[in-house]
Image (cartoon, rainbow, N blue to C red):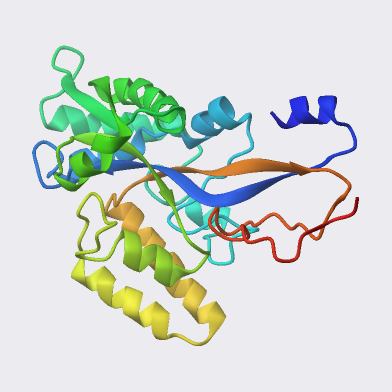
Length: 273
């Protein structure tokens, strides 16, 4: 779209920036078969995040966790540390081999494949990554069927835990650990869609929130990221980037990099014409 706009209006300025909106996998951890942590880990290990980015964003998305990825994200884990998390290794074949061993341990294999539905909201930004997810699940003996749900029924369905695996989008209000962690992963939060609850990690949420030294707080945040990944708490596929273009007569506009919800008042924007 950016290329098309630039071709039609060469004088415009365009920016492709992160939006703090992530695509993620929600897993019903309270019902069989994924009330088994090892099977949830197998799902995490089959994910090829770069394939999602290359296919859906022409390589313009970002691999990350719960927090917005650096360099724009202040709190995001560095890539060298991120690659040590389950399912983030660049050697996808190695991770999938481990995932197949887990599935085989529980009786699944080429002649006994797990059949389920991948539920998602019936709009393209949800459906498209869900289709890729279904393809990647095939690599570990899971045959999934797409279940598109009308927008009016999607969130009630998720809140009822009426799904096995789902593809969801999470839009954060700002780049801050308190907002991201308490809203999406704390026990009892209404936006904690897959019902993840770990009282020890809830204590870490409080600990990082009280920490006044930013570097120490970052280390705590990264430790939380590691624990969330190890617990397979809503595996994050990638962070999206979106494009915005404006004409030369538009002055004072700054595209936001921390949230799709901020910057819309445009109190500093004026038109020179």
